[in-house]
Image (cartoon, rainbow, N blue to C red):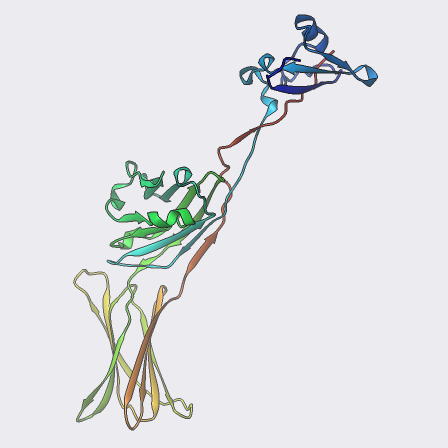
Length: 319
């Protein structure tokens, strides 16, 4: 055996070559040894033989396809989104298994029904040559957080038409993966609640500047002892100047002291509440806004890594 050159081990078993062509016919060890007498042939039991070939005798170019196997590897990718608020910045969340090699990370965002990409980030930089015109100037990746596994997309100036199905695809040196999310768009805002005093009595006001789709509004009223109080509200909706969102204005009259009143504004995307607590001495208010349809899509592992593994070749040959 030649010194200083790598060796591969080949096992040869006496068997007729199949006619399906999966493994090309190859010379038997005896014939091969006749051409290269320096390559030793080791006798085995049952008439089989074991030959050790020098590395130069093998070439990947001529290696039978059955000797190459794909080493598929997938990574976990998870998407999380909250609804986008028209005219404001939105976030399409996406995380993946971190990779210390920034140069190997490729992030692609795509939207169903859109020809171009939403955003592409690879090698530590944005690559927007294939970005669709409807997203130009409105997207960004958090580049300083990519190394930690953050592939989230910032979408600025959210439009009603941005709603739809998005796909976050990530490739790293570890493998590839993708996740799909449904992005909703609309308008929602925190209400402002206050008490208006007049000669006819006190009135509660609950106003919210921007909502879409048009929400429902209802009130609750409870005394400090937990008793439900009778109440009647008057609610109106005013179309804003962009002809999409509406301003919500609701009034509740005949309020009494030592009670808590709650104004609830809600649509399919968000729920806002305004609480007003009235006592004999003061009035306290509290407001909140919550999303009602958070969307999480987890793990798509259908994208194999572009890595190949060369296994130790072993092929059945005729002798």
